[in-house]
Length: 182
Image (cartoon, rainbow, N blue to C red; front, side):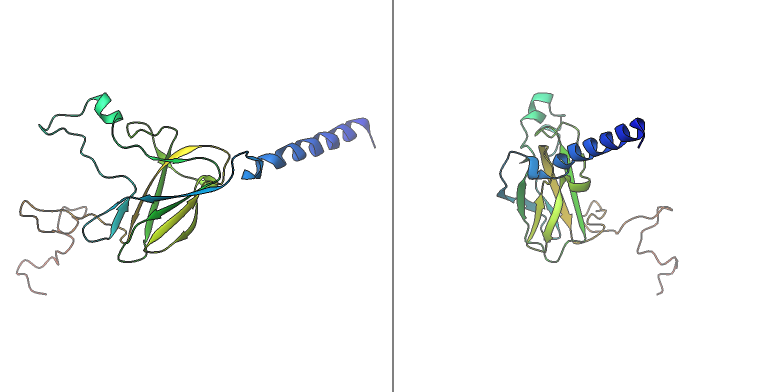
């Protein structure tokens, strides 16, 4: 065997051995723990958010200051090896689950969709969603879930649902018949 080939083989073995410890949370020094989070659901119990929705306007309709935004309730702390049980109580099993992560607990910071093993969905049903951080990194998490792919509907001034407008601007329930016949 040539010396160059032998060195290459040694390098490959050394690199593969060094990456084994980084491939799972087994190398993390933090023990696994579980916490419970109770968020908010809409009146119909079809949409859940782990954060209470907050208007970014004050009582007088003026935008909140940076200090006021930073004082809003934070995301949920999500360190390595943590399992979070989000208790929802929806009317059905969610069809849309969205997990957002941040490196900061405050709402005025950047969030991004979770990817890979940053937030494994271990189990979900209409009562709860169980997430696990299977990395050695710490994040802050915000979770939303809905029993509908489109949980929000346009509302008129009178508060009556109008359906979602299509690309043409016509109401989604519009049949196209000017006389209104079915």
